[in-house]
Image (cartoon, rainbow, N blue to C red; front, side, top):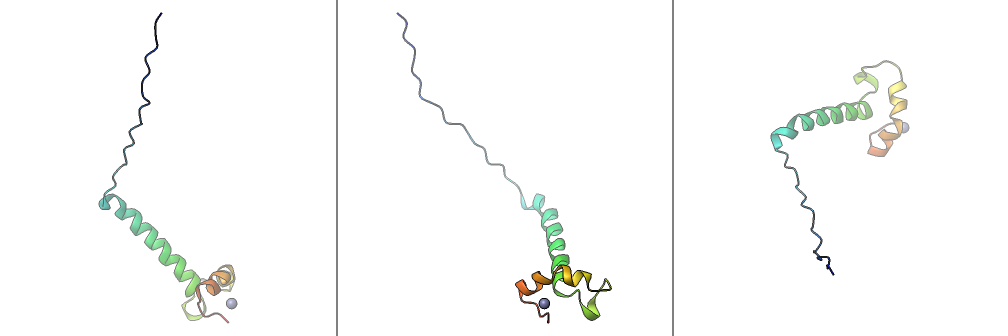
Length: 73
Ligand SMILES: [Zn+2]
């Protein structure tokens, strides 16, 4: 009569990848630029500093202006 050997379950080895600051720097620069553009359109795309004529951009980001506390009306 053969008996089955009972083995303890093994835990999987999880390796956490390391990402250096040099690898993340282009992404940080890209998202920083996107954030600056978004803040410009939300906060300053109006009146004398307006790049796009008309009130379309202002109306598009109007709720964001109020949410972030920019003066509006
Ligand atoms: Zn408003």
